[in-house]
Length: 399
Image 1 (tube, rainbow, N blue to C red):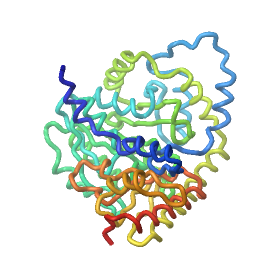
Image 2: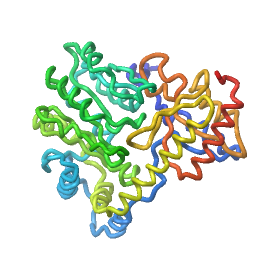
Image 3: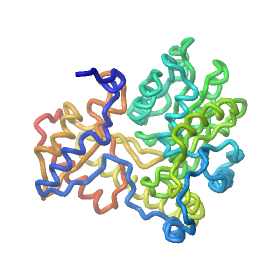
Image 4: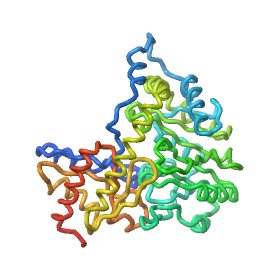
């Protein structure tokens, strides 16, 4: 029997999806499962998207250009300009979701053995993409006690080696909902400039910032324009995860040439997805505001509800639609699994993502979970009731 790859063996399972078989079995047993584990919005996709899909006038669904449709990239330029992000059509490469943008950024920037530094907890798939590229992610833990603020910049400095090629941030953050301040972003800028690094900035959730402070993009930072690699996706802001359209944006021409080789190897991003994405950019301000307001209300409802449950704590996330909560349990991995295999309340249970999967530091996140507030408030209310009942019944409760 031939041996399978070491790369595949060390690839981490998704903390967001690996308990799906248990959730499916719970459904087979007749339980209703409230899914707080995954950022799959339940809000409607813009009507403009469906209108474009219904009215496709092509006779052939052909390959698109490897870098994506010109008309979509041109329209995205106008979208970014609304946020004072000054980019040209040539700076934008369309990808099959934000995930492919991260993977291609790593493949184009990093050699095997190169290192990226990032704060944790962090989106778990970053680690998977780094492994795919043969690179190594070095993490610096942030703390729930500080609301997951950026760790001291001196801690980043200590980890820089000759193999360090970049800093990776997600702003607003998945999984914590933290929103980096201008002061923190300038500290990152100074470090990137001093050590001649790339700044990989995942800004998928820019539409969902819940503070009075302005949204700070990596492209707003002067002096490192050609070192920035911005990651984007239409999945979350237009509630269309299934069309798999993202973007990699950089002013670094040499890097774009490298990225294009990987784009050409996979031929082209999805044609139908691009048509839908292009139409979605015309979504009305009323649609965008309703989506924003709904998430803001859900955030307030969920976080307030978590903090009312004895022994639980969640900081208030300032962006995205996730929160990391600390629970009075011995092991959140076991607790999340137990909720799906051994517990029910009024014919239902909850599905959460254990936060340990968003850390690489051993022992971190052991009593934390990530929850996505992508359910309506009525469903969130029931999920909170189930969580409180589960914590009372769980044999590994610690308080």
